[in-house]
Length: 323
Image (tube, rainbow, N blue to C red; front, side, top):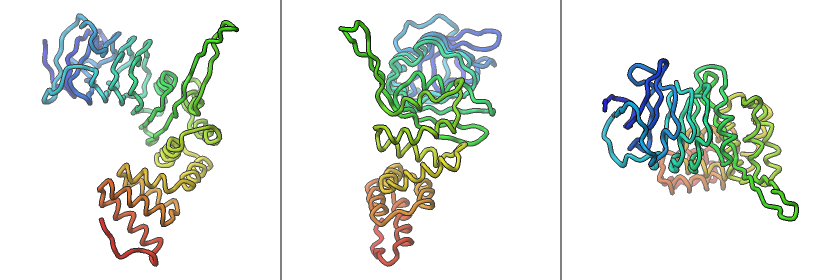
């Protein structure tokens, strides 16, 4: 087995091809893992069928040990929580991530990738995507994930035009047997279905995404999901139009206490400052956010909120500034 240095700890079985490396099998002991971009001077271009499936028979290929530091924990992809895929990756085989049940976050590039069948089967924790675009062209990766996964997806897109953070709310599909009619009835529930299917020719148009907002609010929806969706678009406003910006901000202003408390719980001082500059919280909203920041033991946040309270309500401000 050949040993090479790399961005993570991996045991690999690979096949060299003319244009790149195919990873036939890969297992890591890291919970946060990064697959190497290159091996033996060649780009990693493909993951084979069942490449990261835990417990599968080990495929025959060239054995490689990739190391970057201490090797702790079990060599078992069942423990893998955060995975970064190579930017040169162009093909992912069938069932490549089957049964990676702890996997929550995928980091990948938005270029053209062929995705095989059932790649994400039993990846029940996967709900966070980080897509990096190196050029102006939008790939089809986001459309593929949105179509494959009906659960809520938290997506960050970084590219030459800036950064966008998008929430795709959850929906469920259900088939019920209709015995008298000898067929199955198909039901969709949840306000997230339009978001997962708002792609045209497998490309996302931000204007179309934002146009779904009034319809989302008119349907039965989770209030916290609506707050986060509006906040993400306002805070990371890639291609955000003025009308949509006003609609999102109006919703946050209508539930200002809740979003301030949530931001305090996240420890997001920059986000709090961003929102305080655009909203007019009352004394009760600021007090609730202060209480949350104190519970989180975040004195910098408490100081920021007390300063805002003193600025807006100087006559009622307390002399007891407890951090």
